[in-house]
Image (cartoon, rainbow, N blue to C red; front, side, top):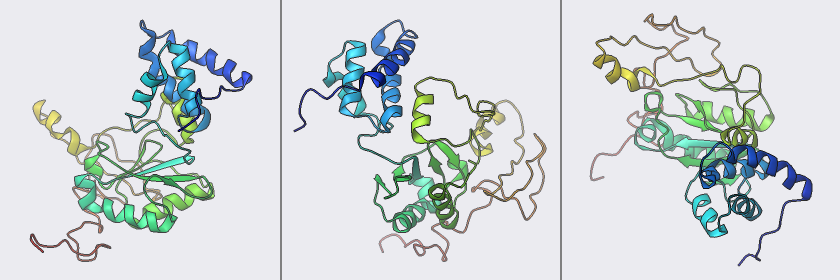
Length: 276
């Protein structure tokens, strides 16, 4: 059992965090509503929610540590042990799994030499399998610090984690540029992302996700081309469907990748018939 109470932050760290915490708490009519962003704040300090961080949140919000712990342990976005600079999550929910997510996750475990929820020895990458990321039209999907890397294959996922460990700059398929997990946690606490161009960067759902809405509006959804990571292909003309060139491909639903479980060349072998 851990010794109680948890140790306090050093005085300088405590003073800095208190100033940030007061700014967060002032946004809410009821102070306890600030617990989720405060947990992100303390996670930004040490990369995971420590006992000290939970004690800090409890003291700032006049809660018991049991109340804080109940929340911190309920949500998977709060880490309970030290983790890497980059949280690499491979979606293994149904569609991503059958499109190759299971093969990607298995290959990355072997490639990195870690299991689920474990971190590489250099402290760079924490690997985990995650549930649906609402990006099924770009399956299989890998997320790094909650940014999307769409239409992945075993090889592209290996290249991605190698680049992260080497310090090579990588660009998400859509959304803001990558930052470290601690920086991501501070942004999730509600503080502005001051990196040039980060706020302007955006990424939305793909055509398969929006087709129902467009049909309801009487619209015809144009094809949207998604470029593989590092292809250097130009962005499509907004709202103008066109046939993809050899350097382009549609979302995985329109142009299945060779990682589909039904493919005989799938790394895990062809899908078995029912009962086998």
